[in-house]
Image (cartoon, rainbow, N blue to C red; front, side, top):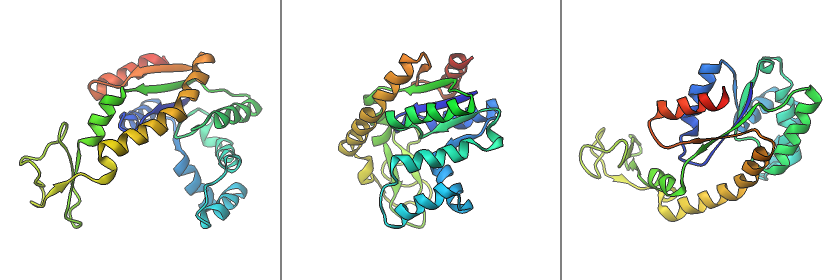
Length: 215
């Protein structure tokens, strides 16, 4: 089974990904993992990517796709895998189809952990971080509230909201994500591969919905 996992920041996609790969006994592949492995191994595409990264430049699409293609040719993926963080664009999705076609394979499911934007804003803006650099404990006013409002349970220091956790920044991030992902959602829906799963509710219940969607 070859699965693409889609979901916005704060959707709980990472938690579901871990549970899914354990259940299916397939590797989880993120672009970050692929790049680290390619750089370490010094693969042709990994070396090419390094030239851009060393200059602080964005790695172009064709090189990203090349690095992914190298990874997807490895024998440990013969029984399937889950892609997390790739494809990010329509061009990457079409390139992935081309890679798989040459291997005589195809994507089985594109699972979207679907959470309304307003819920994502609530989840992400509720995070609080301990101001002590020696501690750095994290809390959430909805899901993991400190015993005393604004005070760290661990060391007693003040809790604060990081700049990237404020509502304005979060809405900007969600806007970027939605613009990038909506063409992918439409693309996989048109191919009959999209499995939209409601991402609100207990973790185990969401996982059960994913299982039903792919079985």
